[in-house]
Length: 241
Length: 241
Image (cartoon, rainbow over the protein chains, first blue to last red):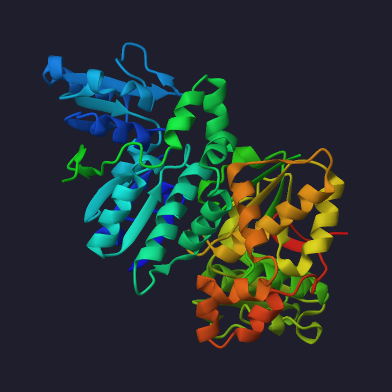
């Protein structure tokens, strides 16, 4: 098994992903919110890049079972039902619903990775379920970190590093790691004892704290809080298995 | 002082560099070879992107004092006087000469960074001279890692991390680090005890070993072997001060 990691979607080449399992990681908060939604029986999440696309798409779907969700600069888009806080995605709100979600970085990363053999969504909240699946499928793994506005983000790279660290313990013979995969593992191990601190001290985490989303940081750091494997296929994300 | 780091030139925006001191890092081997050349009294290094540009440019310069140098896939370009091994850049070869150098990654990184207030070249071999200068100038610092073919490279990010780690010890109040700068520092500290191992186990280092450039790796890991500060100005690199 080869494991590679992209610190942002910038260098991802579609051709290189065709025979790989790709995990898109956007810890704060797109990946975590998708896991929350699907754990709470949301029917599907449709990620879109722009507010306009979200509105156009939702107008073509059954109004009663469709929710418009998403954020810009961290806060809920005006007129949308939910923002991008995982705590909003309760069973009472999302069970049975189609969530049309527009977020800044996660959607770009998913779109860039769609040529993958299988495209999954990863975060701290679904770590063990994800690891079971990745170890079981046995093929090469590529982690695509969403980053923040095309820049490196600490929390995504460290979360990718955790996936790599734990896979390395489980797979024999040991997976081959690229330079970036090795480095992400080193980064994760540095912060492994306190994922909460990792998120609070990251650039994006500090912004979310000033926007009064402290509780979101606690949820996003909670290992296995939402044990589900979101899978992206033809524009829709559903729970695998 | 703010310190930022780009793991590849991909996300670098010219506007963002105008009031910064930028350090371009390409440990294996562009930065190291430039330091070797300038330490050995080479008059100037002119980095160019393509073989054609190198040949065109050198035909317009005094033949006796101009050397065509560079590599593709790690080995010397046919018909060129020197490759990209720092050990080739001896005083006997380069003193008083203009070196026209084409390398795969370093030249791209320099060109992308040319809007900087000051653009310097960094490596392990000129670490302390560089740190003295960066600490003395006091302004914000951006490290641009050359990477390898638009991908993350372990040795460049870790070398950037060393610059960050040592500057952080010297500057009061402590510099503010971006997510990527913090992460590069963690990476450097993980490998700090054995820079030779860092280079030998990196993806690029392993390729150079198969090409029989083991000695280059030893030189590139040697702290302060070439104590010079290469400065890029209007297409030419000369020794600062």
